[in-house]
Image: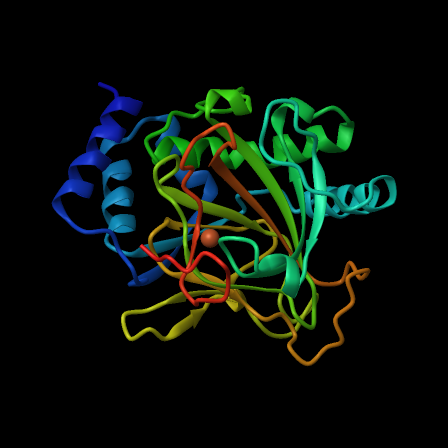
Length: 294
Ligand SMILES: [Fe+2]
């Protein structure tokens, strides 16, 4: 007896029809990555359905040790080498688009669908060439494939896609600098990947002192969970739950050149720029040009 990707997708479709999506976090639980992995590998129907139901009802999970601790070294080395080798630039998600890095400051971010102050490094699978890039990919996918599976996508779906296929995997290393790094209230699109996931690469109290990841609860109160997070954990949840990153060390002096900051790896299946009317994340604060919410 096995619980296939199609069964998982059907189960999601069924519960999504029955109830409206969660807007607020109800509970934050901790689960060990090895337990999640084992149950997925063995296609444990009861376990998988229960996780799905819990996520759709507004429960988020901290997945302990989703990445190995040394992934942080790889992330920092990669960021440093990109900073040295390439000027900041921007490229749309079209065929043959290169990896690149870009600083999103107060002016740049206004042009986007999300208000984020950050320095991001973007990686696409068709550009994974160097040893460090391969290590980044391995370090992220060892966990991401199971998240895709839980989300009803199948472990390897999209992995080999190129932009003209429509949907593509994108890895984003994010540096939220002390003294301004933030990501305001938003929800993420669910049509390509129902479950949002990201890897924590810094420790509050060591790399920075305040701010970090939060959800909104039913009273619209921020529930900051940064203190519960360890390097190598991931946070997974259904993308309609409002979340963000509180300003990292608000009173510090902003320094885009510093590597002592809050680091994070985002992984997402994006609509490429070959897709007409592509769906992107939505800001809920009115901070950016696109003020539509939904
Ligand atoms: Fe998000």
